[in-house]
Image 1 (cartoon, rainbow, N blue to C red):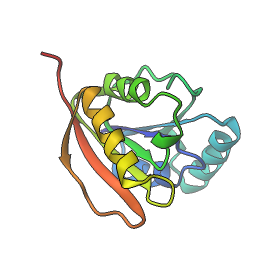
Image 2 (cartoon, one colour; image 1 turned 90 degrees about the horizontal axis):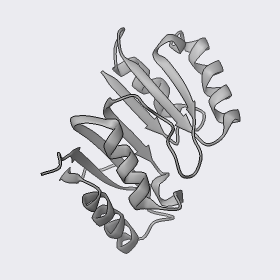
Image 3 (tube, rainbow, N blue to C red; image 1 turned 180 degrees about the vertical axis):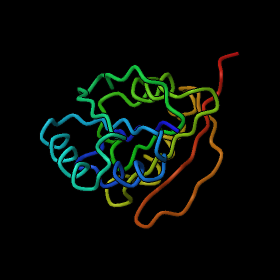
Image 4 (cartoon, rainbow, N blue to C red; image 1 turned 135 degrees about the vertical axis):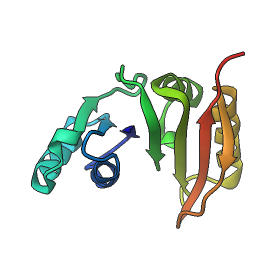
Length: 149
């Protein structure tokens, strides 16, 4: 399996994903700050998982990822993007057919109205909402990539 952790920071979820994808799996860890990616690389080396994690420096408008993935994670970061529609279109294009996206946003920063707006934008971008799991302190959704008609 190949997964992408968008807005990975120091790699809390990237490390866990690297364990989950298995020996032949890959995690693409994407962040806007090189310092965070460097910290993640150090942590991954200490955990013996650096061979499963590829880091990618992005900017606020482009993911800079040309790999197709099975699973995308956006944890507490989508609300920080300057153009959510563009962001979700890029995530959509990164996913393989029927790929999944887990979106989690912090309840402390994102109101239910704002989150519902984000859900609508994701659906306009080509995602189908399939579930809303419970994650502490978070508003969450799992989407599946829909193919264009």
